[in-house]
Amino acid sequence: MTTMNARVLVAGTTSGVILKLDEALSLWGGLEPTTGEIIDRRHPQSGCIVSGRVLVMPSGRGSSSASSILLEAVRLHTAPAAIITAEADGILALGAVVARELYASAPPLLVVSAEDYALLTDGREISIAEAGRLELHDDTHYPTRIEP
Amino acid sequence: MTTLTLSPRDRAMLDGEQGAAAQMAMCILTTMAAVYGASELLDITAAHIDGCLYHGYSGLEFAEKLVAGGAQVVVPTSLNVGAMDLIHPEHFQGTAQVAEYATRTMKAYEAMGCQPIYTCAPYQTGYRPAFGEQIAWAESNAIVFANSVLGARTHRYGDFIDICAAITGRAPAVGLHLTENRRGQILFRLEGIPERLLDDSVLYPVLGYLMGSQSANRIPVIDGLPTTVTEDQLKALGAAAASSGAVGLFHAVGLTPEAATVEAAFQHQPPEQAVVVTLGMLRQMRDKLATVPDGVVNVVALGSPHFSMSEFADLLPLVEVYPPQASVEFIVCTNRIVQVNLQKRGWLERLLAAGVQIVVDTCVVVTPIVKARAGILMTNSGKFAHYSPGNIGFQVVYGSLSECVRSAAQGSVWRDAGLWE
Image 1 (spheres, chains in turn yellow, red):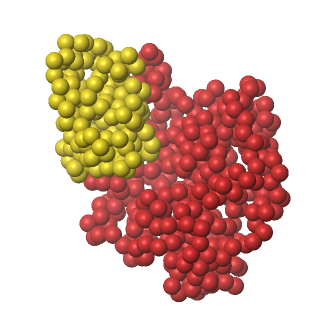
Image 2 (cartoon, one colour; image 1 turned 90 degrees about the horizontal axis):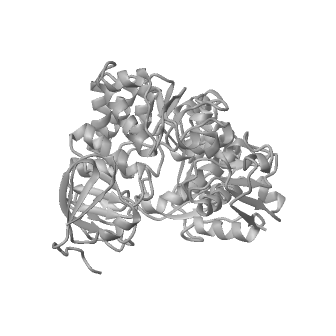
Image 3 (cartoon, one colour; image 1 turned 135 degrees about the vertical axis):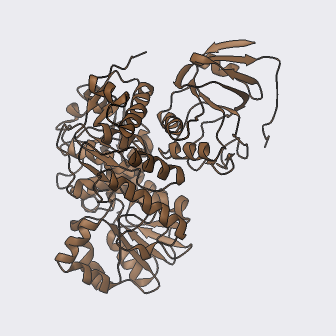
């Protein structure tokens, strides 16, 4: 097991399988909250379902309406289990923190260093523990990405 | 990492001493302040709210939860557009269910004490912060106008956090609130642009679009604009820049209050990059604003940001001489205050008689207003040109005000031949 420490933007504990995106995703116009599907057809992971996954991506992107989409996804139970980025993103954080206020549930939002980011590979199982401690289960691999 | 220090009043709110809504607002605000890396919150004197636009049921639940918790804004707070034209609800082309949720969202913000002016140009509608004022404004064009043209100070706020700032009277002390973050970074110098083009409002959305796409999230400084530039032209420039880039502030040398000189705009540091803007680059950007060069025009949409009285003064004589064909929807978006002024001057009747549809409280790219389902939409607005293809599925032609009016009159694109020479 590999462990690492992340900066916590929105706290919480959970575990799940990593869905790693090759590019930043703008949730507004990029995620369909009724289905949890990535609908940005120019995105390399277009067609993947984020629901229940630990979404790992370089950063958030685009319109400030992304916070509304994340909130809708939490309301409709299609949100990722957690979101881990390499760069802090205020828009995603806002969606998560409002979800926590409104629905008493929010995907934890964490930021990792560039070195740790590289270790978070697609299909690995990961646990998010207290205070941003990440536990990466080395012997796991659940390849569920849709290859184009 | 920076630690956030709260005032006793902030802490009292966070502990729930001022009610459930203030507690929820302060909780969201302090979490976000920590995300931004703020060391403290600062007092604001005004707020402008974008959250009254319906995006989904959760946004309505958020607003109604605040109302139920006793939320009241503590600073003068204006509202941006909603998804309904509450004065002319018959314009709405969506379902009855969405109309109900959209109206409830708007009414929830009114119940919190926000002023129902429903406009993206609050700065021309009596909500005009003074130089140096710390404010919390949402909506990208309003933000860029307040920061750039008025010299007020707001970070780039959006849904949810905007109302939290209005309820608590506080905002994180970060970003464009702070002098050191308002320094220009990239210089755009106009060279060899013909005078006629510099005078025509058609230039400004194109120039803004160019600045936005090259600046990304850096602060642009523009040098070489004539001193005769109007407020509406700067409004159009900022709105377009905020559509193509994450621009929350620009400086125009000799025109905007923090840019008396190039050196002042850059706070006496060298620019990170300098770009010479030529006529060729502007023509190229003009073509990028459109998705088709030409064709049968189905819709003309004006007024993003919302049309001002002086823009109506330009439109009225033109449209009376060249009224739109019956097959063309000619829509101008503005706000209810301007509509009352139009009525007082007798202009409203004349505009309607000429075949102009006036939409207030909202606009055509955020809600279904346009009756045609597809086709070509022509506009003089950089923002409408940018958002119409994605948001409402129209092809776009970009042109000057007179090109838009003349095109509507003949039913197909009309060009003013010498404009870009």
